[in-house]
Each structure stands twice: as structure tokens, then as C-alpha cells.
Image 1 (cartoon, rainbow, N blue to C red):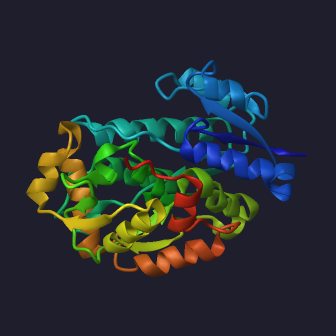
Image 2: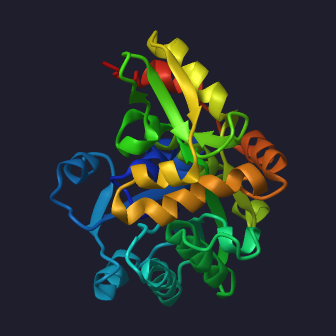
Length: 312
């Protein structure tokens, strides 16, 4: 008998990747029936999902709706949205805690949580203003203390960020018509990069296929590490445009950011050059996750070929 897999963020990059991977994996599609959980079941993306899987309404601000959504569920893929409010860590923590508590109440057996490391812990309190990292890390710690089996998916830098959905992370046009990628870190600073909408499901799918093997483990999910300079060169080759890397000062970087992101995105972009995105063992952790993923992962070159950047 198939187990019900509840997927939060079902219409977003991570959740949709998990759903598509399970649907197209012969073994996983026999093992799991998918229940896509979304706040708005009438959205266009939700309507498209209804043609393939069960779609139910669930909202972390309405625990009753989560109770209904998680009834009968065996495994939960859970993710939380970051908040950049002054109390953003607590907001995201409470959202994640609510999902986990309801999952336990409804007798779910396993939680896979989309997490990130605590920058404050890794840097021994040097950088403390990245709520989108700290909130998830706090949820992970809470889940690990519950009486439910769990594993964790920690995605690196989204390759999709180069496409301009977050404008300040994409290449910028210079006055002379060339392009530059700017960050407050050296050219050789490395980032673990993941094609999230295409590959998140390949990491989560590994856990779903062998939940006992990966219980308690974290997939530090990325295809590989790319330096700032390498990323700019790959984008340049893929687009046929001159794209170079430009290191700017932390103050310049901070001044270029929208108000909500100034502290959070300054610190979260500064720390990896000194401490490593996942800490001192980042390269080994990424290599292990990539080796254990359930399918071939996309390189940055392959991502850009399938999702061309429009630089004009």
C-alpha cells in the first residue's frame, strides 16, 4: 500500500521539484502518493497540479487546516518561508514548529525539512543578522528533538538567482554595455550552487528511497562549488556577452540592497569566504550529497543552456 507524502511549498521551486521527481521515478511513484499542500488551491499552479496529484489547502497560520492536510500522512517534506521582519527568526521558527507539531499530532512517521546552517553558530557570533538562515536552523534543532524520524535538505545558492527574480543577485549592466556580477567577497570565494527547481527532488528523492539510511543526516545540496570568477565566466560564455566579476566593499554592497535585505544579505554573502557556506568541511559535505543524489545533477553550464539569461 502506498504511503502518503505531503509536500509543502508545492507550487514553489523546491516543492514542485520534489513532486516532479517522485512522479517520474518508477520506484518512488509506487511507494508514495503525493498530497500537495498549498495556501491557495485556486491558483493557476495549484490547478495544474490537480491534474497530477491530490491538492489540499494548508496554511501555517491556520493549524486546523494543517490538521486536515496532514491526516493520514506518512512522510512530510516541509519548508518555511523566510521573514525579514525584526522578529523574523521567531516568525519562521514558529511556522516550522507548527508544521512539525501537527505532523507529530497526526502520527506522521518522518519529516524531511528544508534547512540552512546557523551563521551565528558557525562564526561564533560574528555574524548574527541573517534571519533566513537562523530561523531554519532553529526549526531543524527543534525537529531533531521530537519523537519522529527526520532528515534534512540544505540547498546552496540557487542558480535561478542569476535570472533576476532577486535583481541584485543577477548580472548588472555597466555604462559601457558590458555586464558585471558583483559581490562583497574575493573572486575566488566559492559557493555551492544548485538548480533548485530541477534538482531539489533528486536529493530529497534519495531520502525518500532510503529513509532509514539517511535518518538524522543532512544533504548539503549542490552540484558543485563555483567561485565568483568562475560563475561570471560561465555566464559570459553562455550568453555571449562580456560578463566579469567585480568585488565591491561590504558598504557598497549594503548600499545597493533594498532596505529589508541590507543586514541579512550583507552578512550571508560575507561569511562564506571566511568560514565556508556550510562551514570548514563544505567541499566534502557537498561532494557527499552530490554522490548520494538520486539522479544526475545539473551543472551551471547545463542550467544556463536550459534556462538562458536574457541580458540586453
